[in-house]
Amino acid sequence: MSYQSIQHVLKTAKSGTVVTIKGWVRTKRESKNAVFIALNDGSTINTIQAVAEAGQLPDETLKLITTGACLAITGTIVESQGAGQAIELKLDTVHVYGPADPEKYPLQPKRHSLEFLREIAHLRPRTNTFSAILRVRHALAFAVHSYFNDNGFFYLNTPIITASDAEGAGEMFRVTTLDATKPPLSDDGKVDYTQDFFGRETNLTVSGQLEGELGAMALGKIYTFGPTFRAENSNTTRHLAEFWMIEPEMAFFELEDNMNLAEDFVKTVIRYALQHCADDLAFLDNRLKEEEKNKKKEEQSELGLLDKLQFVISNEFERLTYTEAVKILVNSKPAKKGQFQYEVSWGVDLQSEHERYLVEKHFKKPVILTNYPRDIKAFYMKQDEESDAAPGRTVRAMDVLFPGIGEIIGGSQREDDYEKLTARMQEVGIDPEALWWYLDTRRFGSAPHAGFGLGFERLVLFVTGMGNIRDVIPFPRAPKTAEF
Ligand code: 4AD
Ligand code: MG
Image (cartoon, rainbow, N blue to C red; front, side, top):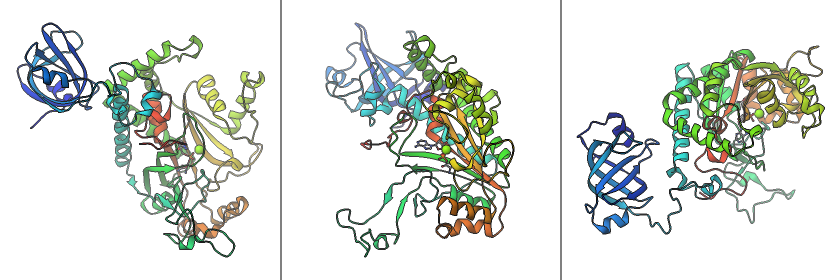
């Protein structure tokens, strides 16, 4: 049976045409004269209402048409009599693919809490909120690939299983085929990984960067877009154990070029979502407005979702150094009144409360912080010359901070000097031997280069206005959470 998507029918609808649509019942309503069935097929947030006359459908069919049931409906497009939709279908025939027992189907046409929906993650894509999020997520992923393709980058697939645990970006998940109850031991009593599948200890990757750099030093400009894994036990609304990261890496780029690219890139993909997901974003904008109403006045945000997205794409990000930011924070009201939970002074890693103060209270726009103390950043970042502008040694790092999110991007120019890089590795206790292949790029044809990582779910979180990162990925992985 040929059929059309609801999105297509709504876009091209001509009164009098006969069409078949297939999807899941959102609501069924019966009046004295007619039965109204709202059908949604996931192609759009919108539903099509099919109308049958009273008595047109046999009782046994009618009984099966309940919220969640899957149907094919053939009918004639007519201008709608009711409010809320331009067209409807005058139902001709209906086929029930699969009923959904109303006694047992957990999704009823009412507002369910996000917490409850997380427990039924296998069904939540059938709600307006989650189908909207998933369509926006798709659009953003598509925009990421087109942005890089349009700008001369090559998509590089870096490995998911890795033997290098040297990046230090986070705790890793071990990958092994050894018997967990009786692994082979070597003489010193430790697990003998030479007998493991890869003949060495392996883990799931925390980042594709190190291999990405190898690609950039051959192809010029590359990007990765793949899953990354971190085993930190951080049960926050911003962390997942499995998340998707986009990591561009560019030969001949320095810190400033890196910042320009990051800013242009995020703005372009957000603009794409605004242009291509208008209905979904309007729905999410509304949803947020309803939520805000339940908040205290002082906690309500000043801008709605659409206004916030427009604001971000039409204003320049604020750029300043870590050292300048710390000065602002030290002199801020919350610091003086002791309202920050964590104290701030030069050399500390900024906490999310500090980042959010800078972005949401002080500058009221996205911020790029640069030139962090080298002791709180990764070994591979390009070392700054010592300078009077900062109390200690710094590196050419950059973090992009977003309102409501905190860090959305982390990146840097890379140390391209072989001597400086190996010296730094030794200082922080990384054996240069273990990363001999990484260091080879600095031995043969080294060049300035830079890159960054964007947490894809943090971007989706920002664009959809959701509050918890577990709600912007279909099946979240977090501590004690791997059901679906
Ligand atoms: O700042 P991070 O750790 O940087 C790196 O991994 C570098 N290798 C990137 C690079 O330079 N190529 O992570 C990058 C971004 C963060 O800014 C954040 O958006 C996201 O990844 N991120 C997470 N997102 C969800 N859950 C987590 N546990 C995350 N950890 C980092
Ligand atoms: Mg970071």
